[in-house]
Image (cartoon, rainbow, N blue to C red):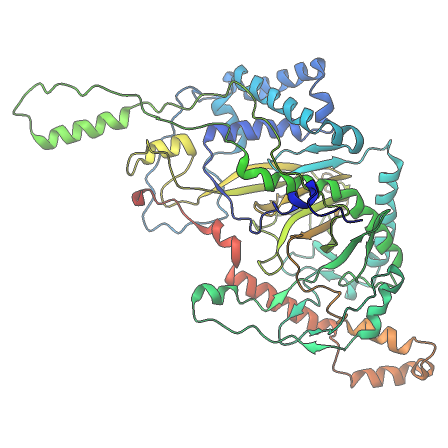
Length: 597
């Protein structure tokens, strides 16, 4: 039910950003605070435990033992990094590790005062989201702007949702080996069960209906099958002479399904690409319930995005060198070059003064309130996949840094549900941001030493900063904004003599302020769906033909698309996006240039 115009929800949803290009200049001290806070917020039910002094005392002891002065070779008060001069013809690797690991950053600045601040900040976050935590188990996660909910065994409804979906997945998993869709270039480790890159929209190839394929009633979801092969081919987008425009000229698009709010729950109103709406009807019902359970997580992510411009920084960096009196010249006739050399040597010996730890935790929230439920239909792209390890293929090397989708797909947030994890070492999802290079007014031209000591950035090196990681725990659902690049960190078999797996469900939310071509507009493109529809219809004489004749007829049908063609199409999609690295991903390919300031 849609609220009246002018309500808080209506006004607030307008605050959802149209684009997700954010750049922040985050100093090393603030990164240390973020990483240390992430250690606490990765814990199950941290928002409850953070107010228990007995548990907090245990955390303090564990953290102090891991990061205290006896484990650090750094001086947290005047920490300076000795910068090595990079070659000016350096080829930047944008997957390169950061100059310091999160653990090293925490050690560099660790003190009881820092720990006091982080615990106070976690308590502030827990208090701000107290109602969500108490009623829904939702908590701010380890990375700013992300949220998670852990499935509790004492919540039978949530537990049953996951069990039901895992049961449904058996129909997708238990198929002959020659039909299993191992994702390209993953060494037969990543098994795609439902993936949007197969049978996607392709300009010049895909047909679009001139009318809606469903009437809006859930009973009519299967009506899409009647329209296979119908519609007009979507024309190719005209190329543009500019290199930037050509880089955006990606002819492919993932197809979202339409998710509609009813008075009671959520209904999927158009087919999920690559999930047959009749054969897998029960899976649709479970996915409706699963998405209903992540709405509040996604809502919190969007609310944080809307309020992000209003969120003050924890730390304001000022002068990072102490003022010094100019030394008197001992000899008036001293060589001018020697004066310059002495001045340079003296400047290089100046201690770098790190900013102060804040005294009060930053307040959470902001002026905007986002309400997804009941305001509009949502477009959602669904992915189901699993990673399988065996004793012969025992280590997953990790994923690449990426944003989800392209500008055309307008994905604003992602929710990942870790359905089942068995016999693998701890795994994490890491995040990084692009660092703004507008340094404070106190910045001195080409001050490489100061910039590295304060911000951990080096000239001609990547402007990316890792902002944290979230533990992948069975039953945990994580939601995050698509302004961060993310990647799956490596993991391997815990017991190398037995197989292991990790199974996930992903919901990619299209920006609610935008509307893109969806499965409501594009009829199914799968040849196998058409074959079942045509030759299994009891009202059709074709269904009475022997199998040999049906297959002979099918050989002369060139549309819709067969699986081999769909895989070729997927390969072209992947190559196109790899070559162009389109849209907002380009922001993560910038380097620091100190000489331009």
